[in-house]
Image (cartoon, rainbow, N blue to C red; front, side):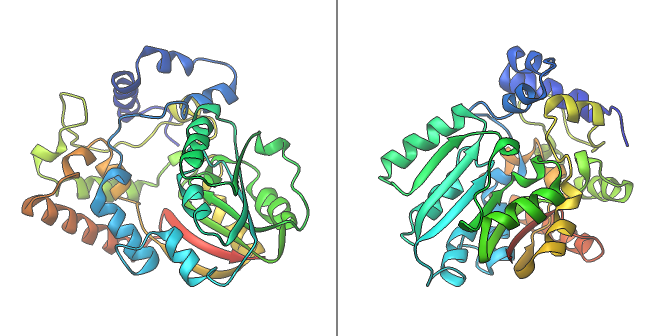
Length: 322
């Protein structure tokens, strides 16, 4: 376990540049819920995380659906839920709800209930639902830990990058969600399932730094900073807890809990073990590609694939049945 690292200092300065002093001071609150909400209470946060790169998204699509142009929501509907009608979905920690809105466009769904604690994101989601004239999706501001799960009610329970923010994973997955799903109901996840609090093992940090060396120096200039990214140190536990007390609190328990309580219908790993950390703060260089940048990304993908031959993926898409 690392208490504090050089990356913590760089990340704090980066967040100051991106989101200003009020965001930094918000992390001094003794209220853990307020610190968690402050991590997500802006709509247009400028960042250079790996998920903004179009070619990375195409890689995910291919690894999940087999088609770089087919997003997982459409894959789920076409392959697994095409003949299902009057579906009821519960999405927990849905935030801006962009994925839930995609599902809501399918008339297979009678009702989609989105739960979150963030009013700012929900206001934007409600506006989008109104714009798209979607009347089958509803937004409920509520802490999951106080939510009364209705018994045998939902056909689908859905998590997109939110399950790793919850604690007591075994109880949540094995009892509460199982209770609220109908017989043969589906649990669908698209999640980070790697190390708790992002305390990556040494071999992963070493491999990430080896991958970084394959990125030419001009593309290692950090987003909004006058410095280059030459090494990855990992996150310190102190910053993790201060920045967002819910971040990856029990992420490594997700897959064991699911596999212990559900039948696997479909499961696809899409890596991220090296790419997520190597490309953080560098992704802006790869938004538009020329031949050189394309070759760089292809080589990085090959290096991660080789690493994944020996290590479980940090990111998993899965469909499971109760």
